[in-house]
Length: 175
Image 1: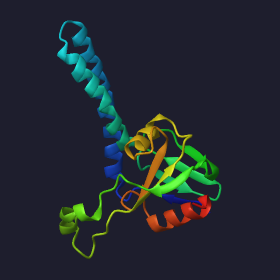
Image 2 (image 1 turned 90 degrees about the vertical axis):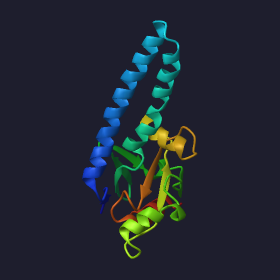
Image 3 (image 1 turned 60 degrees about the vertical axis):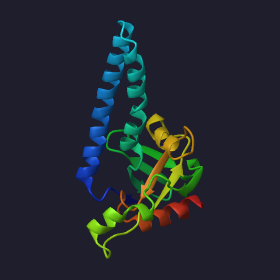
């Protein structure tokens, strides 16, 4: 029977993903506008326009890094809010690795204080390297050190019932 693993705070996730898309659209318009100003004789705007366009990459991370997923024996269905739902067969998953885009335990003293020693739980995460994923997921691969290849992250902070999720992923991928 398939299991679904969504963000524990759906409103926060929805705001982040839709906000990321809005910000990316604004950045594209601003970058193009700055480049247009550069062609009108204001050369400093060329550099700022290019930088603005390059900064779209980390914004795209908000929309694709850790989407909700549904796991079954056949594969994993990626269910982001702003992109198309996508089914990935288990044989398309090239590797399962530790997810490097989560904070290490020793840098979260503020979070530990806010949540309390009993409630605090260090961040945990795995990433699935899936070369067949389209452009938005390739930014995650770039920032995770895998190159420009499709990657999704699965973490205990962005997925409900994380332990069961990882157990199923490891069982079905054999990795």
